Length: 286
Image (cartoon, rainbow, N blue to C red; front, top):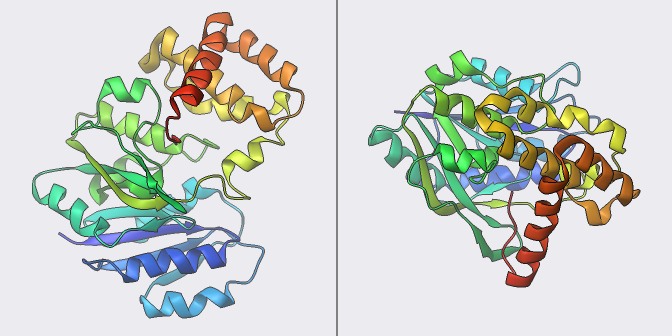
């Protein structure tokens, strides 16, 4: 078994250098590394030495296509039997590839792992499942983002990422793979460093989003409404609408929109859970 690494990047050459350093420090080196640049507006000159040092293939797209299309291009261009994905702003710990390979040798078809918060490595975020379960998926993505996900290439070629989704592509992929009945393993270990709330991340962008522009972000929930059922669908919608509320303007409009789209119960439950997490000082979640 050999592993191809697919890294998606856009306008973050400095972060990419750190991500590549994490790959260089792996106990197990991958077969190949593909860096898919989604038509960055800034120069990647500062990253070229790091790209060359790990013998990575650098592919720059001709137009802005989105992370999902970039990942699909990486899937098609890769030659390994296993594909491990890495976002440019995250960093794998040295044992990441060797740990996931053990799972594939034991029969896994896909693997997800836990992570630590970059800069606050004492903050560990893991799901205790040994395999990805419907119970956990109903609650949303309680496992990890793309940097902790890997899968056999043959499965990805028939599944691919949904290029119509603007977010939730990890959860969408997990649900679709789970529904096929594959052996989907979860490693309850913090095997990579997750860069939480970086300046140009999703959370930061949501702070400036207008309430009327939220509907595209509900795409994954709407797509899997039958899988979620009424209760979990409304819960997921309220979480999407109210995410990062304390940083948003027009807070009342956001709350009213949550009530309109998901109901009073789901909206009230969101605030109950937020207060409870604060009181119990629970760690961040993805």
